[in-house]
Image (cartoon, rainbow, N blue to C red; front, side, top):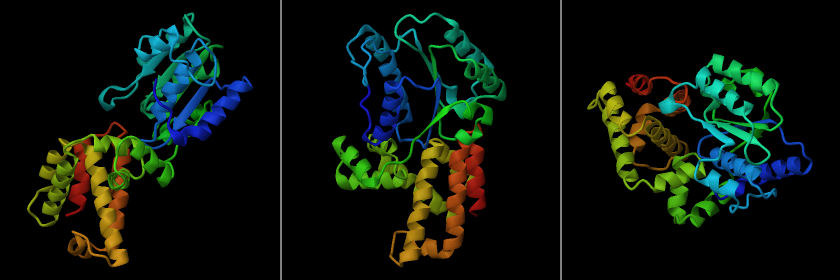
Length: 311
C-alpha cells in the first residue's frame, strides 16, 4: 500500500468529507504538474474504496487489498498509453465493457486513466457516454498534467482535484524523511521546479551529475560553435528529452539570476553575451517544449527546434 504524501492532506479531507456524506462523485479529474503524486493519490483512493473493511484508509490486510497490491483485483483497471501514444477508442470501449460486468468484490468498479489528455476525440466521445450515464458502482479517475487539452464536455462531468507543488518546507521535510541530505534535497527541488517525487527520483540516478554536465557541456559547445544543433538534439535524446529540457531551463534560470543579482556563476560571461531578455525568452521556449513532449509530438524535432533557435 502506497504511503500517503503529506501535502495531499487537504485533498484527503475533501474525499473523507464526501465519503462521510455519501456524496462521492462518479468521476474525478486529478490535475497538476508531474512529480506531485497524482498517481499515488489515485492508487490509495482506489484501494481505500475497494477495501472490504470500509474506513477512511485501506486496511491492507483483506483479500481485496492483497489482490490490489499484486495488481490482480478484478474490479480495478488502469489505462496507460504506450510510449507516449494516443489512447484510442478500443481502449475506451474495453473500459465501458469493464463497467458493464458485475463487480466481484467491494462497492466499486474503478478505472484510472493516466495521461487522459492523450485520448483521441473518438475515445473521449466514447468515455463521455459512461460519464453521462455512469453505472451506480462506477468510479473514473482521470490523471492529467495538461487538463486543458481535454474536451470541455469531459472536464465538466468530472469533479476537479487540483494538485500543486507543495510548500518548500513541506517538500524538504519529506525528502529528508526519504534519506536525502538537506543540501541535496534543496538542489534537486531546484532542478525539478519544486516537484518532490521528481526530486527523489533524481537522487536515485547515480549518474545524474554526470548526465547534467554532459547536457550543459553540449549546450555550451552549441553556443561556441563547436556543436551542431541537430547533433546536440540527437545526443541529448539518448539522455531523455524532458530531463534534458528541465536541466537546460534551470541552467537558463541560473544565468538570469546571475545577471539580476550581479553575482558570478560558472556561465556569467555567456549570460552577459546572450542577455537577460533573450534568456527569459528561451526559458519560455523551454517551458513550451516541455509541455509539447506530452502531446505525441516528435521528441527529436522538438529538441532540434529549440537548439536551432539558439544559434
